[in-house]
Length: 72
Image (tube, rainbow, N blue to C red; front, side):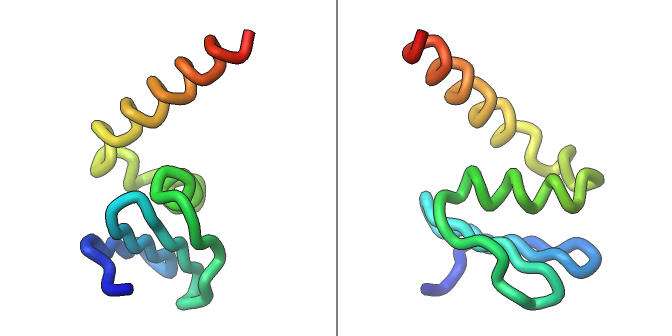
């Protein structure tokens, strides 16, 4: 799988390809799965990068809110 988007910050890495994502610490794969979860993990470790992903975070938060409403 060749990543469409690759982001790095300090010793953290994020690779995204469509709906799939991978999160790395020091080159070691820490998470592989949904891109939104990989992004959340990346930002949990590199909060300075949040500005770069502002629009994606809005989409993630909106989907999470709708999901919570559907389960009430």
